[in-house]
Image (tube, rainbow, N blue to C red; front, side):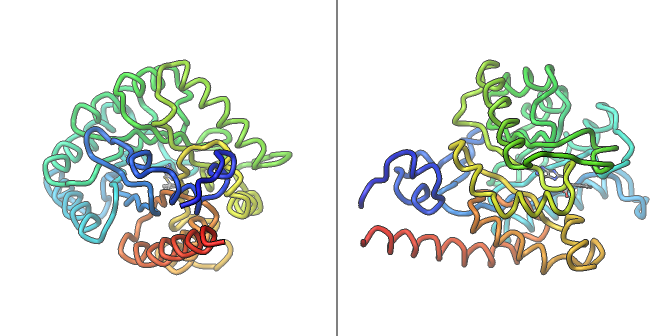
Amino acid sequence: MATQPDSLVAISSQWRRITLNDQSFILDCGGRPLDLSRPCVMGVLNVTPDSFSDGGQFEDLNTAIHQALRMQAEGADIIDVGGESTRPGARRVSQDEELHRVIPVIEALSGQLSIPISIDTSKAGVMQAAAQAGAGMINDINGLRGQASLAAATATGLPVCIMHMQGKPDTMQDKPEYDDVVQEVLVFFRQRLKACAEAGIDPQKIIIDPGFGFGKTLDQNLELLSRLDEFRQLGRPLMAGLSRKSMLGKICGTALEDRLHASLAAATIACQNGADILRVHDVAPTIQALALCGALQKKKAELTDDR
Ligand code: 7PM
């Protein structure tokens, strides 16, 4: 097989997936492997209390475990556990409340799942406790910009996903502004990669995510999706979360519970444009869509190699 120079490897998802040796694609998530040689699916597990159920903690825990096991059976590569709603205007959750929600779930899941668990949090104490409870990745929508969370994430030694967000969750959608959204998010990642490396995080363990919908207008989200491949120049695995997001509702005119078809199209496009990990709510249908992407990427690489 012909080898590509590094610069080409970095900008072409197809070549990168096929030409580097297999080992370099396996991300060690606290002892559990995440195989990035093909498109991966991260299943979302929200453990915010259900206002319509009065079954209490026990029922919530069982529901969460059941959902996670189902996502694993459907083919999810990793489960992202989150206890804080980041909806614009949402009430902030205290660290104690967040710990109370997510830690019992992570403890139970680490015994029952074979795939890794990721913790979706910006709080240092939650990162530390989640790692202790068996989490294998830290996913911070704040990109580890908090000093304490950067230190806490570093201390766990786990892989981290740093996401871009302009502003703060409660006001980020008020008036997001960029000269060039891709350039600004690239600058952000370069800064964060530097800060993470200085703190002691192995650059090989850092995943980047442009943060669709986090301080971005529909137009800016579309530009990010259209130019997603440009983030590959950073040489890091790329995550994208578009599942059920309001940009899809704006385009299709559909409510939250009616965005599956647009979510599948979005995951497919993101994957075609270079995303390695797709963060989604609907695992089974996404796996099908991405199987096609994976097969096509393999074929494209074969065709390229033969020339
Ligand atoms: C309300 C608004 C509830 C937005 C939940 C959300 C991402 C993430 C989220 C993402 C990464 C959602 C979001 N989105 N982490 N956490 N990337 N890395 O739609 O896009 O799930 S929360």
